[in-house]
Image (cartoon, rainbow, N blue to C red; front, top):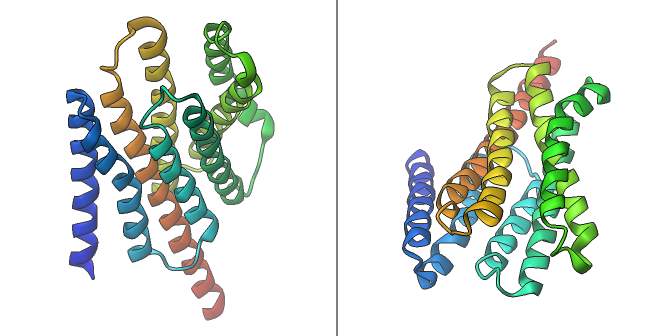
Amino acid sequence: MRLKTQHIFYAFIISVLLTMLFEYLDVFEFQVLFKPFIILCLYFYYKRLETKKALLYEAGLLFAFISNILFLDRSIPSFLFFGVLCSLGYLTIFIFYILKQTRKRNFLAVLATSTPLLCIAAYQIYLFRDNLESNFWLVILGGFIVCMYCGLSFYTYFLRSSRQTSYLLISGICMFSTAVLFSIEVFFLNSDILRVPVIGSYALLQFSFMKFILEEESEEDALYLEENLQ
């Protein structure tokens, strides 16, 4: 089983690298094959290592898989719209897991860690102002959810630094990096070159959050065993 798990992990790494390569070479046919495969590899990797059923997280992976497919062709407005909706879907599920794990909540601290990100989101909306049209509220909602995800990730790590929350911190940094790189690409470079690091950042975001979920499951199992032994 361990060998099979390693094979799935290697397939994940290879699919990420090939997706980055074909994005750089602008070979759409191979992007269609390998980009959705990133989430599929993560799903099977998670199923190998899970200790309990987490249907909500699997639903989040499904949203991520669908958004990957829809984002393959951003020139189609409906694909872009529903791709963003699916992205907001999996981010909302991820936020739920973070709130569930954070037993001691201080929403003022969360607001403090999220405020700089909200400023960046507001600037993105300002840049989008001529192209918002009917997607205005979707952009507003997307900016808010991304900021909350990053802010909660940072806050949870600083509240309780551990191996588990380190994965969450990496995921939050990757989300922040993806948003910044996307803004630079769209508004300042007018080039697709930054899509390559965006893919790498996105893959690391998904992988690190999956490791966060697995660490949470292991921690809950350890607490359950400890309570039963007492």
